[in-house]
Length: 231
Length: 220
Image (cartoon, rainbow over all chains, first blue to last red; front, top):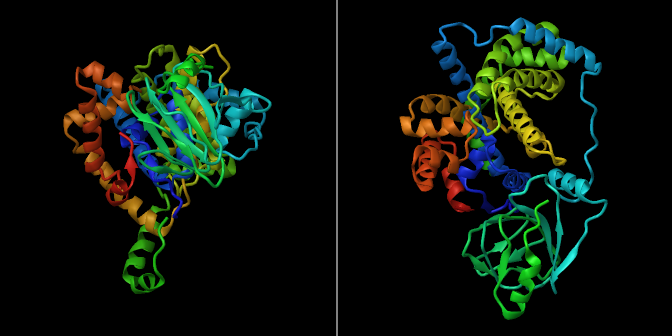
């Protein structure tokens, strides 16, 4: 597969994701990347096996310490209660929720559908539009960014962490070219000036822990508008 | 995805015999997977009760090790119930060629645990359930099954042989639900040390595929 993403989350981020200990907004970005990246999906599957191993071994250790064969005294009652709930539900399968259609990974489509009837794009600069997404957390601002073909974004640095996942098209900066599925982490202090590819618009998912800081004089006037807006 | 040149595939009959042997032994014959299939296909309550007997204590001890802010002992049995109801509902989606029953149930338990926490700590409407974040495991090719079988065996072996300090960190992350940053604060270790111990452990268990791994620019 030639269009496999070449910029991936770090191994320890995948570990936190597999263990379920990653922040919501970061998990959204990792999940969007996984949609495009068979290599990371393979790694994730092996990382989940570690989880199941710990679940098994932990139970052995607990029941050993408690010197009893089972950690659950009221198992029968619990099973009865579970069976009663299953019977009461009437149907075997939970009602299939139709997942919202869209051009992006299913999780992003669902976020878009939960946020607005239609995406509410607002202009950030001449070549960049942004549309915020509601994610039910307040540590990161999660949004879609759209860079028009060949568009130059203002040079900016980062006061906090910024995750970016390319969902459509590609963009480049001083360091590299980023295409569909690529996962990019910018740390505080990193400065860059992304440029949209010439052959079409580029749409990215992003999560920012603090607003980015524009560097030019004109940009500094814009800074006031870029306050983080967690949803 | 690997694309073998045709010539190479023809030449390696010996390898393909080895692979098919692995494939057949990888068709999960363990009793838990069989029971889970029986629940999925035949909706067997007897098999479900057997699964319950085996997994309920595992899920409860998984819940008991949870050190998340806001987790309290009263939630332990709620988690057991919620997970086992999900197991009943979703059993038809279990594919034994993609994961063992235990790994599959671990992922259900992990997702339920996070959802319970998010529901408890959040008054806002949450647009996503934790299940939405995970993807179906990929279809296995004989070659990837071969590799997986090898790595599963190695994983079990090497996990038990991990140095105490690496094991301790993985335990905190997987069982207690701590992030690396929380683990570092709790153990009084620099974050970099925590991350490098995690990576060393992954290398020992051959979780990362080194050649491909180096090709990629992995974000630090």
